[in-house]
Image 1 (cartoon, helix red, strand yellow):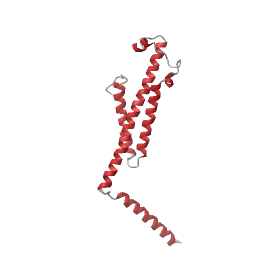
Image 2: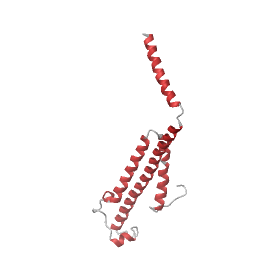
Image 3: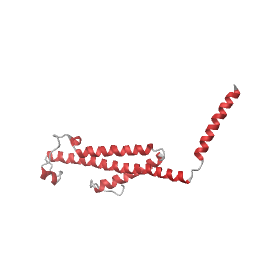
Image 4: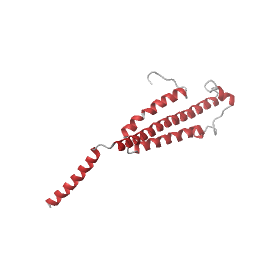
Length: 160
């Protein structure tokens, strides 16, 4: 029995050593450039996904701001509502249905989900390490800062 056990152990050790040597060997230049382009693919998918998420979140916030303005207009606080809303005689969609009845909110949620699917694809890419996809997530923070300042007219503070 001990020889059978030693034979199985040697076979297991040999297979592990072969696997480790296959991982640790350097790749040929053609394989390396192919791997680098695959690596870039996952990183680009993550960057695009993060920007799409930022746009989607901005659209959702736009819908929330719109509902807030329309509620203020309905309550008679015309100073808080925009002049454009007052001129149009704007009303809340579906008698106060909130953001769920605004197409811009649904577009925003769709973009957010689509961007997250892109991030999941980047995380699932075997050639792109999760540490890279996570680090590239800072693009979402930067693009959100830019979009909120330019599009939503939110103030940009030094601490931002």
